[in-house]
Image 1 (cartoon, rainbow, N blue to C red):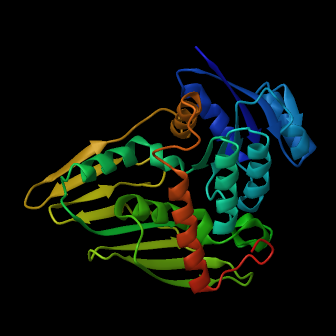
Image 2 (spheres, rainbow, N blue to C red):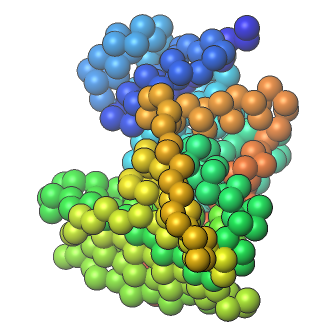
Amino acid sequence: MKLTRWGIIGPGNIAHTFVQDLANLPNRQQVTAVLGHDSQNTYDFAKEYNIPDYYTELKDFVKNRDIDIAYIATPHPQHYEEALACLQNKIPVLCEKPMTINEDQCRRLVAVSRQNETFLMEGMWIRFLPSIQLAKRIIDQGIIGKVTSLRASVSFNAPHDPDNRFFDPELGGGSLLDLGIYPVFLALLILGKPCSIKAIGKLSEEGVDEACSVLFNYKNGSHATIESSLVSSLDIPAEIVGDKGIIKILNSWYEKASGIELQLNGEGKIIYPCNWEGHGLYFEAQEAISCIENNNISSDLMPHEFSLNMIRIMDNIRKQINVTYEMYE
């Protein structure tokens, strides 16, 4: 069974979860290198997972020839530089969402991926979860008919600490990039690109969005209502309404959903339970491995163009609510 050698960039909480999740894959996995900005934290991470090589400089990390793919789990603004360096050295990349701060950065990464024929995928991990896959199959099979509306929100009552990444513009803070990307993703997956976008937001003292509400309209009359917030905590199922029925992706719909609720017009509810081992990050890891083994530089399920459309939409929303990251624009 072929061994996949991973390099981890950013030994934070999500990287711990990712490495632990790799144990759920049927094929052999090994983390061979880790890169972090803090030498002690990086050493501790390497020691915990028996990682032979650890670095604090990106230029040293990308010289390592024992890496089959890099997983990038740093704060949003660091993704571009790290992914670019990997791609330039022909190291395939699985990069946490959002892959970049803006469309220009995303376009550059895609261009280098294609130029160097090196795999690149945004780590929108819920795209590969059984819950989202099941909901998508039900819709694609026409069971709920034409989708007329979608409603999804993600909220988290974050501590209002100026040093916290959630409210720090230099760390790409704000509810949209961190939380709102999930409902944006779901609307784009189910309904495609909207023909018009209307957004309002409430900004923090630091100039990032504490809360954001957005309406997507489509030429066929459908619409999507999406919300994100760092100042409230509501656990609401995602709801997809068709002319023949309704799908609800139950809580927490953007993580480990308990199930899918299907209600057809004039009939009772059917609940399809969802459960899987671990957190679920290994599903995206398996997709990345499969793509690389098949010499694909992009995933059919999470292609480059999808990531470009998603960040383009979020740029539009940020412009409407007057959120700018001047140091990265």
